[in-house]
Amino acid sequence: MAGEGSISVASLAVDRATVESMISRGDYLVIAGDESVLESLPSGNWIAGTIPYFMTDEGGKVDQEKLYVNVIEGLSSNNMPRLTLYDTNTISRVAQEAPEHGFTILILPANSDVHLNYAQNAPDFPKMYFAPIIGWISGMHLDNMGTQSAKVGFGPAGGMLSESQAAAMHITLPEDQVAEIKTVNLFEQGEGDAIAFSQSGFVVSDCKAGDADWKLSDYVREKGIDTRLPLVANYSGMMVNVSIQEVCDDSVKLYAPVFADVEYRFAKPVEDYVTQFNEQISSSNGSKVAFSCNCILNFLYSELEGKKTGKFTGPITFGEVAYQLLNQTMVYLTLSKI
Image (cartoon, rainbow, N blue to C red):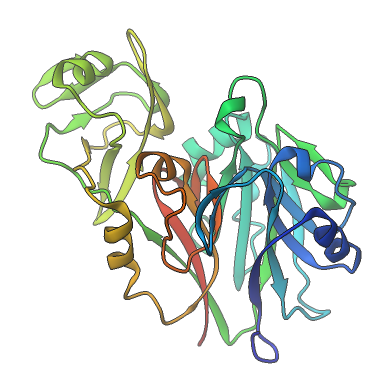
């Protein structure tokens, strides 16, 4: 527990009845779980996203029965969180409406217009980067792709589930506490051709690779690219991944947008995800981790089911938010005393 006057976040894996009890006593909750367990939760102080994949104390896990809950603790009557819904017309306000001293947890449903808007435009939203915005893209069991839509839940509106809106919890911190977003990205640019695009977007065709003009789909096939490896851009030392969803005849579908005139390279292979992950996080043990999520592609490609990723727990998602949309990256939020 945090000391008096401090905010903390507890992470729990519990059954639906326990969550209903927590809602009934007024707890502020961020919930992840399969749609079948989330639907018809009672109204209250909570937001949620559909997903049945998790990092747990026992390792990576598929669970369609439990709910994974972040409980906001240490609140007082003068700093209660604000819960807000956003659609594609209002999502640009999310950073403006974030607390001046605090953080925001944001959940967006995969493949919705609000998800696409955020992915392509978040870096240019007013006041972005003034306060931490962290979160994730909700999804579904991979067996249900194409037949089920990703959703977010919003407790204040009678526990509604929406496939077109994003849900946010804006949390104010006391002045002697600070929130910081951190990432664990094991991918770095490989030695192959630099790749640039003339247009931004989730679906790309023409590109320049090295000194030649290509269709990216042809380049991937002719060069024998392992599409489990993302395209990686280097933003002043920060590596940002764009993961491949599908290689079509004349185009490539992506899980995040590429941006025009940014230089990308396909990533170097990661030989042992868990070992390299644990090496990278071994130095990050000073502040308390309040929230974390990891990518479904890391779960799949690195076979994380049953494998522990340090002490980090939380949803395994269809995309990660650390201000902007990320892929194949673990993001986490720490709370520490100033």
